[in-house]
Length: 162
Image (cartoon, rainbow, N blue to C red; front, side, top):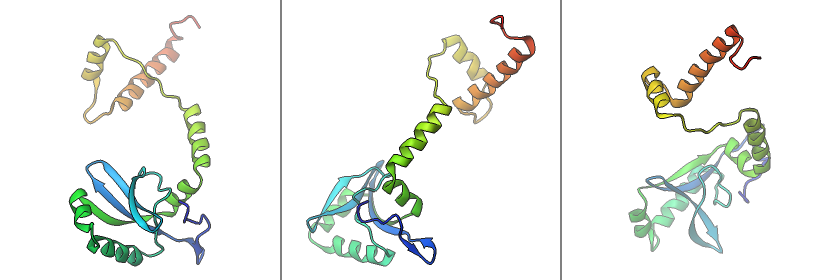
């Protein structure tokens, strides 16, 4: 967010900022302002870069009220199921202001914990479904079964002759 300062500090605590969020089903947009005219642009809910922000919730609410009574306010209300003022936490501000740090941390995490993708045979899928515990996710089921297999392999010395 161009208007956010990473070092916004008051009394030793980072300040929260506020933004106006528009929601309809899974679509989320944040108010941005260009050349004094409100424009609406898709902004990923994880990154708020370019979103218009306010230092106080009251300021954001006042702007929203003004926006909704101006010409076009009815059109906005009809287009979106939810129009609300939301708080932007210091963590969200940090993520927005430091995307490279976040990318590097994610790459490091992913390199230590790779994701394997494969298509098991149909008979294995059927067996896994029979073995699944109640409310167990696919990842939990596979990790549980692979853990048991690892213990068996360690006890028997493995099946590859190692």
